[in-house]
Length: 387
Image (tube, rainbow, N blue to C red; front, side, top):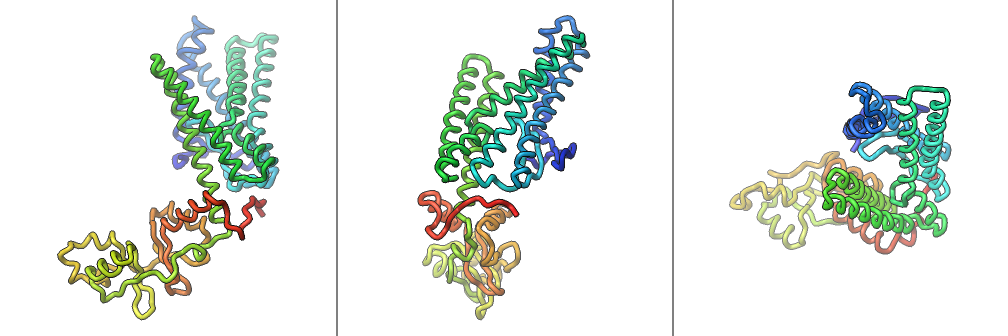
């Protein structure tokens, strides 16, 4: 999402970045304020003046979002968590935690810090509007302060909705986590509540669309879809962490896999290895030395009529750092490798010899079993504070 983020500042040691999608929102805010909001309050104002007020209000909202996320980041840092930075994007902003809260209480204080900051900003802008009126500042300043007071109040209240992973959803998960001590189950319950809210928001958007208010209905639909996607992604990420906690590749790889020989024809390989043993991937050995692998995708590139004359050694994919992993690699590191490279199958090497093979199917099987029955009996999954 944030591949196009631009760094604009560094505050209290946190990098502040703006995603390209925020520029669209900024433009929409300026347009709506300049053409709808401020013209109602200042019907005689000219377009340049309206644009200046709209830009000032947009910049005030921009700063308010940064303060909201800074509150999360500062409290998280006080609890010893690492924050890589703050990014504003299409649906608001996010403080990018590199490590997760270690307890429900920690998550509660981190989550509530953002809405609390927005409430404080709303109060501050409301007070500024009062002072502006008393000391006789231009009506434009009073209007901008009033707008920012209202928008920060809305921002605080909206973020307190129990929709995970929004602040309110994290507060809900923190409460459930503190009561049960089970982070995964608490996250599942929080995601369930979030899904109900997301579907409700989408339904309201659809109602608005079918009532003729296309522009008004589209935004709730997008927010609802965003909540569905991010909540499920957060749960999937946590379930993956639980499944691979304390596990290395050696614990769930396939040992003693079926192998191919360099002097084997592709026809023999397909009939006597792939089809006979229902596999699609075979390491290639010569006198016990691992040379590489061959799979069905490689074979399919060769015309079938040539399978009897083409040998495995002619098409072998040599072993290298891209297609091999070590036994002591963690499950999470393997998942990161899969996501980064798009590879689904790897040779597992130990002291330059074949130890086994590991595939995406093996990885997903571990995740699915863990999701159904929880961590293995010898495991005790818990968050640990970063060193």
